[in-house]
Length: 618
Image (tube, helix red, strand yellow):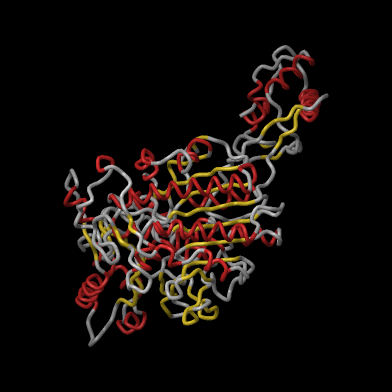
């Protein structure tokens, strides 16, 4: 911080005593460094008492009137500023030709430190050495799942704004349960019984805004999961958005988006059948990794929980799932991306392109084997290798100075409860809650407390962290909705494995329930969308899971909110990003780099671009 900033609190602003910031008329004058100021003062032969408080400067050897003082100060400031303009010009790197945003689904933030010893020099470790890395990046909402997380990354907004509150949610206005990218009006190519689009997404993405400003900018989005590709790409119909369709066993898109002429050529060049008969074998030495005999893990599709894992052959029931759960799907995805980059000539002109890639393998494998498994450690060796090869490709075809690469994740993951209770070094309260058992218990207890008439149903829909009450039942009961919501919260709070529950209306009002913190309240409020959030919100206890998958996520605890955040490329400062960051910061940061104006986002600009001062001849 230079002296001008110290004295007046920033560029051309100062805060008067007891007032709001006042703007100087000199706000547009470039800032000077201390040497310029010293030279100017020496020339004028004036000694200031305390320059760091120059907004209230006094001159110890002169008695002057206020008017004379003001005139002299204006003259001095004009002289110094003129010298600055002549001597310096701030240089900002040109906008990149391409932005690449990679989301490694379910990659927990601590994996970077845990697995780095197994990685080479070209992947994650290269970014750590040459890029900007935040070790303290956390989502600031409760519903840490695939759809909400991917919606945050390139909108910079949370579910309260995006409307993507969960993977599946009940929309009270539509009166139906919806999948986050479902849209029957836009059928999927080759699988027309289903439709996909970003119709439920209520916020614009970076690509949407960039293409309005620069229509020749291209948008390309790839993933194994349709929701990852669609929610990072956004609502612009000129984007090329592709994902793997399990029915057609090929990369596809829907009628909503641009129809690339090269899709058929892509699927011929990168065939689904190329990995038939492959086996996933170990790479790491037994001494470097977790045991491969943990029976609380799930089974590999078509096999068991121990290496080697065999993919089988196309036509066999488990082949597709086995391929997508193995490292071979990483090659499958990135070969497809590389094909598309070449066909679309990404990064080859002066109109910035945005490419988003959802790496879903890490999530599919993580759900089965959990974060403490040998499979996950082995998988991330392949992930690192693929990432390194991809960076090499970008360096060779676009040039490091012409692109920016971002690495993050949509959410983290909890340990398998049975694993930490069986193998943990300290006793841990961990367990599971199953939806049917939860609903049955709630119905029974609500019937006892509020009355039971025939086949009365109190609970319409449960999708953590939200519970929808049955409006018809509440109305016929004669009780106010608020009273029924309070009663339901009381029932939930006394159940095993439930950490907290509160009426949504109470949370919306900004009232802090007993035992909550302001931070927890904010996380809940960021998840509330008026049409898609139920009357009650709740969360399981730490290390408790909702559902039957061996490992899962979807809470506000650190293991679900902590994710990596890394930047590499032209103009990016090398080093660690200080303080706490948020995946919502990605969009405003990239928008600033691309000179795209954004407003009303949860995230902030991290200001990662390094600037230089070029001296000009006087």
